[in-house]
Amino acid sequence: MQHREKCPGFWGLQQIAELVGTLKLGGYVVASRLPADRRALRLSPSMTLLREIGRSPLAFLEASERLDPAASPMAAKLRGDAAWMVDWLGASYERFLQEDLYFAPFCNVVEFTAQDCGYPVLSAVLAAHYAAAAGVAAPAPLSYGGLAERFRISRQHVGNIFASAERRGCFSVDRGGRGVTVSADFLSEFETWAAGQMAHYRLISEREFGTLS
Image 1 (cartoon, helix red, strand yellow):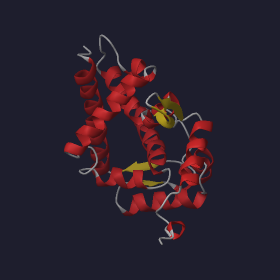
Image 2 (image 1 turned 120 degrees about the vertical axis):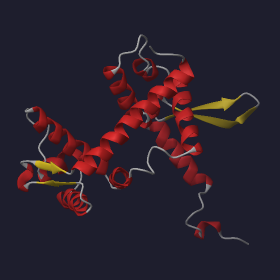
Image 3 (image 1 turned 45 degrees about the vertical axis):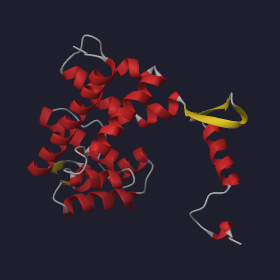
């Protein structure tokens, strides 16, 4: 007889039920009974979950529409339509399965996304960089304490992210977060990746929902 409870990779019915209950309580999934079998439940993502999953894609689509205004902007429409959001994100995933043009060529960006809060910290650092280039104040301090409080991580973890970034030649933050120096190579990598993300989600929108301009 197999002792499934000893297998760490096996999820029992109770564990699944607890997970589903937690997701339902948090408003992340909606459960509905199937007409053909009233004992079976269909779980569908709520708009809250879809907006969390689509936070970054929507930001890139909105950026694209600000740079090149569309006659019928899609970002706002996607935020309010769950079916469209599912189709849009699903089409993006299908494209990713065909060929990974979004992450594979951008190893440093991927490295940040693999770290806990690495991408938000990177975003804060680059926001400070672009603010300095524009001659305006940074939107948020880059001190260990400031970033730790903002993203609810430890000061040590902020230091680890900074150390890894400096070791890989991406950027270095001055003591106390007073300034940041971003390498030209990494800035080119990030901007190329960001431009690709904007183009990707814009093209997916056009293909799925019609021409935007």
